[in-house]
Length: 187
Image 1: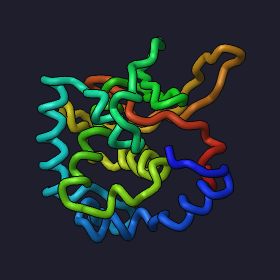
Image 2 (image 1 turned 30 degrees about the horizontal axis):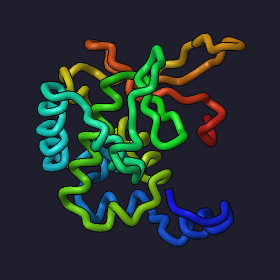
Image 3 (image 1 turned 30 degrees about the vertical axis):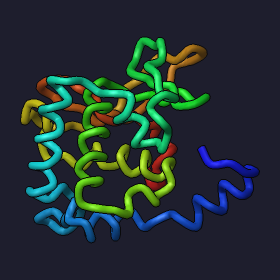
């Protein structure tokens, strides 16, 4: 993490922030869907992601992979003791809804890094948010080719039941994204 006051870090993040859609279109990671109403991975980008996923499914996720996403040295990354996939980066615990979501983030991050020298300049918080968003860009599950569905359900947290929207595969049941409906404008 960069040094300086919170205000300085915020200024730095704002100065280096990018327009995610423009950036991803520029590096040919995404393209409009056939209906032109949404965005999807390009075939070439999908191929790169699938290649990395294959390696990650065999070799697993390494602390270096997580460190690259958050701009943290791999000696400051450790697996957190949780019932869900989580890694501690410095003093922050980062969590994912499934091991598949972790692997997908790492595969996408590696694929972006292969085609862009600017990725390291993007603030780490924005990089993670971009990766989270890209989990929903799959036309079919990149692990099993199953259908991707969006559904809402109630999950139990430590203190209450919470309604969440999930993006998951109907075949292998990997959960890629989980968010509260009120976190998305217009939902």
